[in-house]
Length: 253
View 1 (cartoon, rainbow, N blue to C red):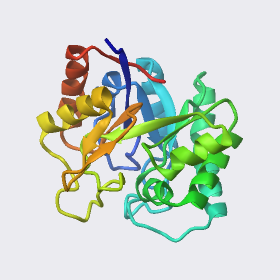
View 2 (view 1 turned 135 degrees about the vertical axis):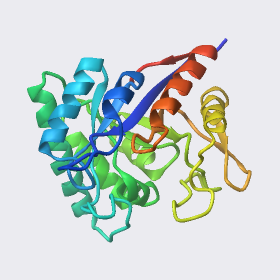
View 3 (view 1 turned 60 degrees about the vertical axis):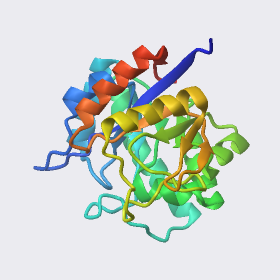
View 4 (view 1 turned 90 degrees about the vertical axis):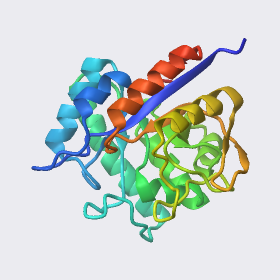
């Protein structure tokens, strides 16, 4: 019997100023990797510090979650950027989280880009290579979390950077393996039972059905849990229970 291991990552620390987003303190103990917002789509210095502390307390791997500079649009609006700008954005933001992690006595474990920045790089070789270069230049064997089967994964493998392939339980896929844009019908999967079943299928069978019904091959190293979703806590609990039931070990890579 094949033994499967799955990392559960969650976008964290997206509150800023007087605004609270997500339920980080409750969700944190149920995940294994935290992607901490760096201030460009959510988060601020105090929130980064507090979220790193929560992760350390829960023994959760600390990661950076850099974004396009789009606080109003929550980093989900596409912008035209150069490869150099991609490099600068990732290195600058991840470096901030790395500094707070260092102050807390833990290393920066990974980088996972957010929203439009992530989706843009998934299909753009130049942006992917720039992203990978930035993560490599952070040093310390920091991993890249990247959409399974995307150009980000290929770039990391090409340049010798450790990469963890990511899948999504609550997002629909297009036939080419990219995520269905949130602006389209059916982009978000709100049925918790169906979403968890998709995770188990992706881990055990290495495939997921696209929105149109096409089977897509995926390598599921980590699954994303969106911390800003209202049902995040319940979903995380149900997912952990399902992994236990199916003999899937939950651990950070």
